[in-house]
Length: 84
Image (cartoon, rainbow, N blue to C red; front, side, top):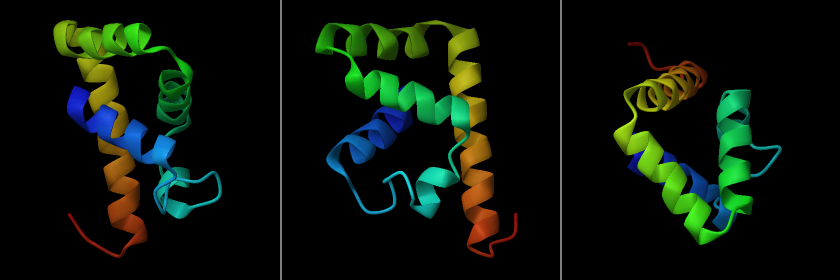
């Protein structure tokens, strides 16, 4: 979960296609995850490290982030016409 979160945050921070405010991949991201990513990207490195550590060590945090990532994937698959 932590690596996937960090990847999305990195893509957003780098301005990767699809991760801008008005792009479909970003809009497919649940609001809570968008806010977490933007807060993460605005934090200093120490705070970022602590956040990733929490995702890795706290089952409740890992489940919450995992659920948001799963919801995002479902929306992306639906929008691209894929079936599960």
